[in-house]
Amino acid sequence: MYEILPLTKKKAKQLNLIVKPSESKNKKIDVYDKKGFFITSIGAKGYWDYAYYLKYFGKQMADERKRLYKIRHKKDLNKKGTPGYYAYKLLW
Image (cartoon, rainbow, N blue to C red):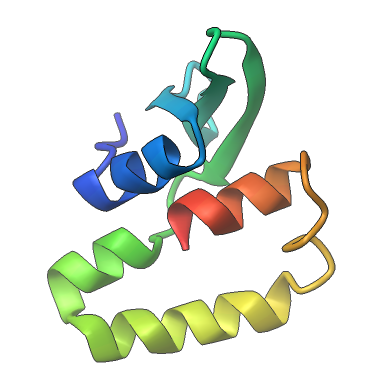
């Protein structure tokens, strides 16, 4: 089971969202609005995210991985309401 780190919880709170470990076997997190309505599942299991890189490798490595993530996923980052948007805002 994926452990939601404090950085992700903090970002969720700032966006008025609730995050819980995903019920989907291939995803890390389920995202809910403040009323508890399911929005989407995000984050493929088996891949690290910013909070994990930061925790285990430090800020320099985490920032580099974030830069590369932004390049790979640039088409999804700003489409509000999409899984890619929530993944970027919460995990990166």
